[in-house]
Amino acid sequence: MHTNTVGVAPQEPVPMTFEFTDDALRRLEAMRQRSGADSYAEVLRNALRLYQWVRDREREGFHIGLARDDKLVRTITFQY
Image (cartoon, rainbow, N blue to C red):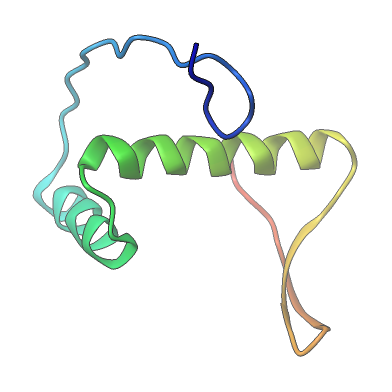
């Protein structure tokens, strides 16, 4: 049995269809190119992992922020 990076057996993919505006599709393509992802699905899976991580940290009482040279530059507040 193969496992992914978090030690969980991979699941069979489930096909899904999404509708994107032209602008959203351009942004998705730009993210795919910049990240080196092989597909839009890979970009969306990575985005989902990041979103889940952020929400989990917020539920634990953490604040998400940007830092430069070990100095907090800005706290990020997400609107859900």
